[in-house]
Image (cartoon, rainbow, N blue to C red):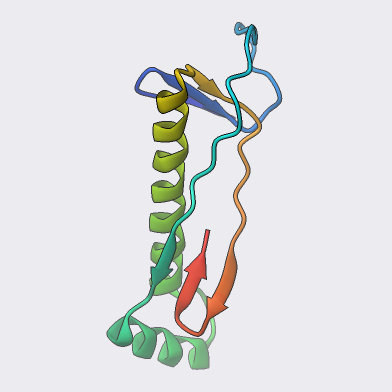
Length: 101
């Protein structure tokens, strides 16, 4: 999967058809720590009792990944890169109510 974020190509592959890596600028990362907040935590806890998708957590994860991706792109631009290859995401819980992406 590849897409353009402004003038930076972002892909989860090691290469992208039609493009050639000519220089490696360095490693870029994008990290964010997000909290669900008390109100959304209560609603999510109630939903977890009923089962099914917990929309509050899905929204939080989507927001965190988008923010992390934007930081990856910003860091790539700061290095003078026009692409980021082999992008991966990871998610961990640091403490009750906080997620690390």
